[in-house]
Length: 115
Image 1: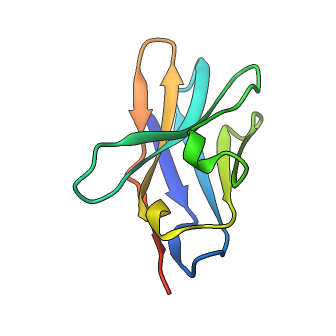
Image 2: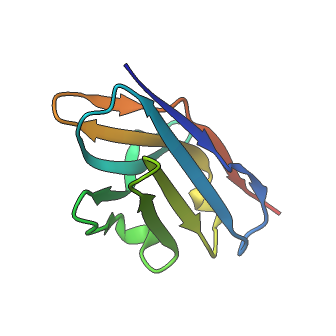
Image 3: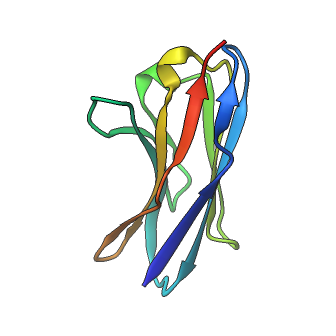
């Protein structure tokens, strides 16, 4: 089994920054990609950013230029640096790991952007 543990969420003012971390542990044999998704109240879960094993990051258009995803391959950890945060970024952020035959999710971490 694979476990994903997120950290780094919280309350921040508009224009502020947060850094999310997600550490994967357990029976990890193949990681095709790691990424971050988010779900705001009353909305569907949406992709924020993903980074495959080749390191070519993909971003949702609304976060391009503000968010940066990165991976520590040795530690099976993925990060999301979020800058210039906006109230519309408020959501529960979920870490995702795409293995060879299964997809795994963390429990989520709340990010609230408010003055």
